[in-house]
Image 1 (cartoon, rainbow, N blue to C red):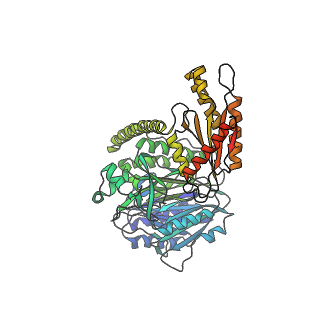
Image 2 (image 1 turned 60 degrees about the vertical axis):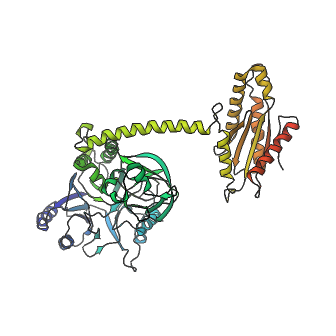
Image 3 (image 1 turned 90 degrees about the vertical axis):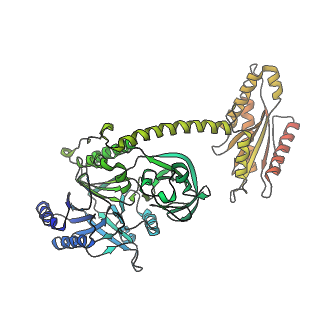
Length: 579
């Protein structure tokens, strides 16, 4: 496999490009792919080039996208046409075109799925950030998890409309999917970003569309920028590239770049959002960006690729400014590389769904055939801290300050939260927090959850323990009893100190019979493990109840209290259930 890349400043440069391709093309190539990434403002000139390539190479596959910057041999180019020629020895190609404007056009996925046994990977080029984009990416989850997916949304400079194209048509809304078919081809993808979360967490309480957050914590979403960054509606623009939103989804952090503010104070994103997701502001940390890239360089080097395609977010270009060479340059020492700056990136990691991403760099490494020992690569030189230039040096110092200050603040907040929610002696929940947990479970019966039960526990004759052995021993008894309770319940159950020597245990999704079994296990554990100096036993009385469908929280409390009272009256050291 070979990759040849050419950067055309004008259409007249094509002549030398064609000669170089013919000179370096193996006669036995099974297929040829031309990827054209165009920063030219003259669209007709771009189409003319694609048609000339078709005339010169009739059997080649030709696909392309408009860009907000082109990547050529580890460098950023602007207002050029990047022609990447990928020459395969055994791999076959299948192109699926979907024009979302054409109502008769079918989604491209089914025909690729018929080839999935030979499918080595799919390059996904999208024309716009719209509802169809998210629907298409969701349907891509039918592709087996071990098949790499990678690509990006066509970019544009200024007010021009982005587009996709082949030598035969232009697509303003839709997708081009290029399937790589062959058992000898291996494709490995890597993802890098490097932005840190900043400030408090908010919840998306309302969305206006797939890519518009209407409200955060029931307030117009733009307040997060107005309050914390003093960015007002009229100032909303390119400076927000420095402060995207980070969304938590399926245990992943995904960055979302704000595009604009709506009349109602909502935030339109370059990417989708979902009601209920947690959101924080984020800031770019130059050193973290470089450290994240280090892992990508390492993985690419170990893979020993024949070629690399790069899909890099436009926001990274604006953030790094004069330092883009620091980011892209090391790829040139690994393998021939090319790509473009996107309006959103597509990649799938391990077993995760297919997400549209922002502010990431996606590297797709190709290798046809096994690794040749003579081609083993050395790790490229990584830019050092002092090599950062311009304002990015200042940004790095500020980012380091924010990182340390935020970490200290989060540590302090965790301590405050612990003080606010936990009993200081025993470490179980305090009364206020256990009441909140119970109210949450009974709200109202969590709609569809089957059963909620609880246990009220009182240590027998605890006053005598304090009077006989002293309060230090009494504290040890309380702590030990709580240890027994926590060891006897599930991770999702909650143990709280109700007051003094009385405790309350919430058991979600638990029937009365199961709760009685838990209570008996706790009773036996406390009786068996005695912390008293003279070896005498500590015992406990326990009341158990299940909340009825029509019962209020107060009714539930009364039933538990009555069951505990009966346990005390029945001789203590026993479990009584409210039937």
